[in-house]
Amino acid sequence: MNVNVSLCILIGYALLLSAITWKASKIQAAGEGKMLNYLMAGQQLPTGLVAVMLAGLAIGGASTVGVAEHAYTAGFSAGWYNGAWAAGGLFVGLFLAARFRRMSQHTVPEMMGAAFGPKARLVGVVAQLLIMMTITALQYVAGGAILASMLPGLFTLKTGMIASAAVFIAITLTGGYWASGLTNVVNVVIIYVGIFTALWGGVRGFGGVENILKALPEGKAWFDPVEGIGSAILAAWMAVMITMACSTQAAVQIALSARDERSARNGFLLGALLIFPAGFLCSLFGIMAASQFPGLPNPTLALPTIAAHISPLIGGLFLAGLWAADVSTAVGLLMGSSTLLVQDVLNHLPLRSERADSGLLMSRFAVLFVSACSFVLSLTVVGILKTLTSGLAITTSFTLLILANLYAPRLCKRSAGVLTILASLVVWALWTWVPATRVGPHLIFLEWPVCLAVFALCAVLDPRPAGRLVPDDGEAAVRGRTALES
Image (cartoon, rainbow, N blue to C red; front, side, top):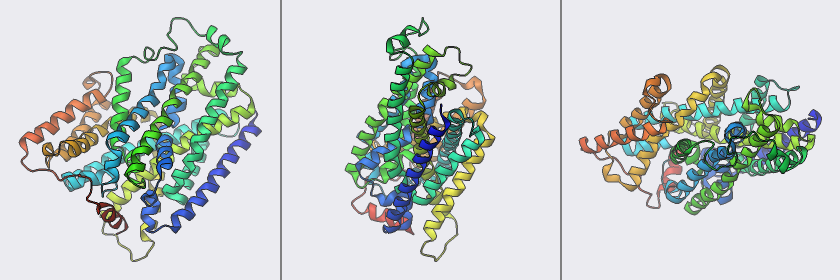
């Protein structure tokens, strides 16, 4: 690949993001309530921005490079990773997004505190930060790997991570949530432009579809919709992604930041449609690599290898698309983690300032702190990050508590919050470090029964009712804005 062409495209993309971020900073500064504007776009995101925020969060390194890697051996069915993410967005759009928007809370731990007491909020923020910062660290690693693979003469893994982190932090620190939404409009477009042009270039460069199909190794159902990954893994992906979409702060915050209930609901439904094709399209790169480059020493090389064998212009667009996927996910995660730190940690410390802009300064400090911690994590524990991604299953407890409170409030008891969240953490820890406890093909199949059992015991044994997360009475939005600005 011609490095100069790819580098020029990458620089052009970074400059475009800079211009959009500058514009977003002006919108953010002009709005009422600086902290609310910075952390949640003043709760004014229209349907379209809600949709691209969700799509940008979902389509990251795992949804592109990771899916192609899996498809190198599993075929087309690897695309169900994004299909499961889309199912999560659809579920939230149908049943939860509008209800989230009517609540006065701004974080998932705040919801736990309102319903189950301050201890549940404290345990909840620890669990949520563990999940969010780990996934953010993965985005640094993915960004560095993409730059190092596509521009090896310019970037190593470490320098690629530093360059990626600089862009992530600059967008988040300067423009806040408005920058996240507006840059994701560009990111989603570039992602799909890069994917489609690279598919066209690959098919053309490798002699057409017929030639690619003839060269595929025999004995595998490359285009079977399920066989490659198996029904058990497909079920696990569906369970994990639907569970995660209901209660991970980064996803819930998108609904909370919508202009109104209709924007929240329709934005999630539209976002699910944007997410669905990406995985299956990227699985075609893995199949293409299996056809033309069998025996790669590492399947992770499947997608970069294809990119290296197409024209410089198309390869550069593809590079921008892959990096855009990583940028879009990382920025949303950083904003979610920062909101958690501000709302559930800093706001509960005896640190008050009379300065009018103290809330905004505190929010930006949170961005820097979370970014630094995530980056250190990405540098020092890369070897175990893949294992830690099973921590997404911890969201089982939050999803169960939220759904029960909204749809079966009489079953919710005061003790259920702390005990159910702690149970999910204990199950995750045992699964991760005590292999003998691993029952079934995925942690999620153990999390749900255990969390349900603990929740049921609390419902039977604890006479104290939990608080209600009932959609507000029309004044909750005002109360929420006041709480965030105080």
